[in-house]
Image (tube, rainbow, N blue to C red; front, side, top):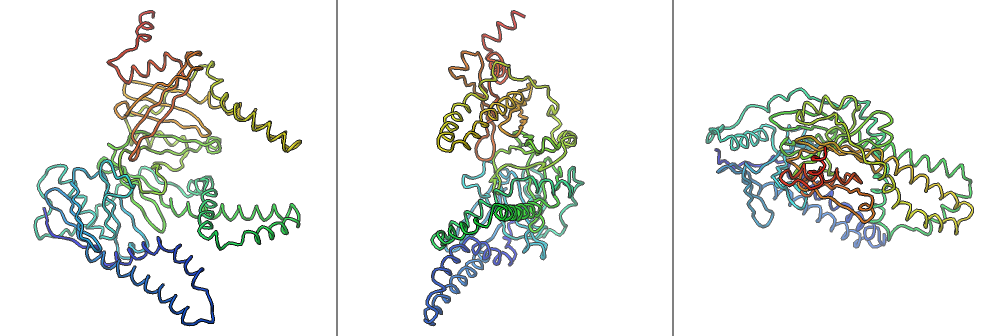
Length: 499
């Protein structure tokens, strides 16, 4: 195994500078607004202020160069070894057999030079949700070399690289994708992704950074004057703002999921996506703990769905912590793809639904808080407050809808659960992947002889719970007996004897 120490590409210095600048941009803007536009008559004061800004930027650039100069990585004794540090030299040793995946990213600084950023993830990940190691910019050949060294260590084969011999072959040709998102599906995903709320949330966070500088009273007065122009004008402006926010969210989603493809290579799921920044995410099949099929009402009506997976360990450093295996796809096209990836799963289960006597449990708690709120709204805003009474049939209807959706299916090696909060969710879980199964019974459930089952599987650095609500008590005991076959409940035994 080669002990030669490798350096990152020089572009890493610029990337480090941009990364720090991105983190510091808001504080710098605030300082610029607060102090940079002071008394224009005081030339030397302004010059001193801008000089401070220039020194800060120069320091960030120099720190990026030093980080690049001091970063080294090499392979030794079955480990990926990294040496780094700006002022204090640090070393990190990562055994190859603990490395779960290598995730690649090609940003705007990487593509012109044929480079990639490599994130190394180990089993269990870290509590900070950051990758265990990150190589900011290396060639694709060097990234392939790391992968080969890992495969070599795990297979305990003879070394691929000898001392002093450099790798010259390019990265192997990628296999034909088993799924590629079409432009139509991408546009539908972007249009129905709910990114408008994210846009306004980000806008609110940005505005909060300048709360002391924003003249809220003046803005309020201007809004009140504007409202006097009439409802139609206000409605047109609100519509225009929502339309712009929707267009921005569509554009961002399109850029983020552009050319979304899935491949299967070496018992790993390879996901690539992105227009400006091309990302390549690797998920070992052995880390997959569960599959989730999510259908919100709009997508359910149009026949579309989203498939996500729960993966054990890893840094999960993406903006959303769920791994979208199929961000948007026609429901009729899902099973052939999942059968190719997960042949062991029963993808057409016959669900056992919750009993009719459980219907009240799906809406009773909602009515307990809706009725007093509706009464208060009616009292203070009569007669318009009477419209709040519509929440009562709406809550009842949603509860009935949830009851009709809830159910489960078990066979020898897997459990499939289906439930609904607002979107319909179907979860496939292998018995050997389930971390715990708990039966919960409230006082009122006990009187009706029903119970809820909570199933926990690993997801990221924690766990993900799936609730099978308000099923027959005998069915809950059946599930517990299935999960713990050495301990049959007395109820199940008596039932089997009676039959």
